[in-house]
Length: 456
Image 1 (cartoon, rainbow, N blue to C red):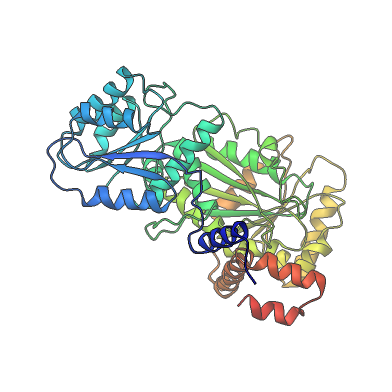
Image 2 (cartoon, one colour):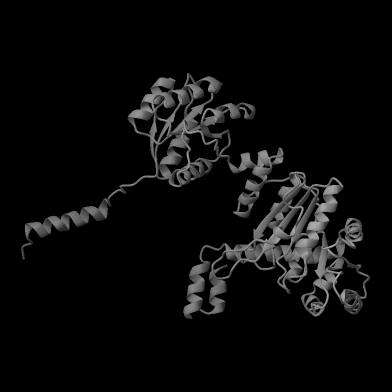
């Protein structure tokens, strides 16, 4: 049977498409990679060019020994959105500004300029002031350059200026540069570093023993208000106080209302106080999953008192012992939460107990009830303090108790156990196949045991 010519042509085209699928009509960005000056080495530039190509960009590589004028002309003729300048010759302080000036003179102010090479850190500000949006030194990962371009693209889409001639003041820092800046005292970059850690970035900190206090207890007993009172006392003593305040995430939307800091009166007015609100992101145990490296980061940046406030969800507070050397349990009068504390085990793990709102009736009875419960649980003499964050009574004595409290080595086993469980929970929640397994569990197509095996 003969095939009509038109059908044969369609069949042939179909087979060609199978072998040679059409290339996408959209690319991320057109980028020129250039080497100004007399530098004769281009291996690094070629590595960057290939990495950008593999990242979905169209890359024009100019080759060696280009003058600033030639580079500007290439950017213009290629209609490039971004320009990467690679320099090892030590002439960056002359050649890079010359290229930036040339781009502005030719009306190419929207072009994004970034640079790489051996550029001393104390000479980078002048290049940033010229409109260079990012500088990558030796050892920088190509993934960081891709992240920079993604961030720049995001700013363009939202109408924010990023070009060499657009006076936005914006500059992009790699995670390593951000951490270096944070360690040098930048408060802004400390907050960025904590965000990077929360999103999975890892940094190497020197072995240390940070001072930590975990504050836990039921909702509504005034944990945040009491922490605010302690912050003020510490700040008056010259301490630098950092607080990691954890609130729960919605199990449905994943969002979170982070409102602990509104109760901390000293949180927003002193350079010696740093408060970071965190969501659990549905991590079990009443804490965020990356709390430990955040503590290490804050300690490395010079914060002498680090306080961790748990979500206060009732019976999940025991995990705080994995991350805090001393634990303060806060309760209130007439709440009936002593039984809950006993059930959770936190009563016997608390180093200090504070009955807040001592200005209210029945606070003395609540303190006596707690003391009785402590004696029944383990026969210990855990101190119980009556305090009021409202009028400040008892806070000075509580602070002295906290300061004299030392880490209990008897908790090492429990601490290690909770750290292991926390890491295990994080690995499970970050597993790429988790949602697929949950879908199968929901439909009943696999058993719970099969789900566990598939996630190993």
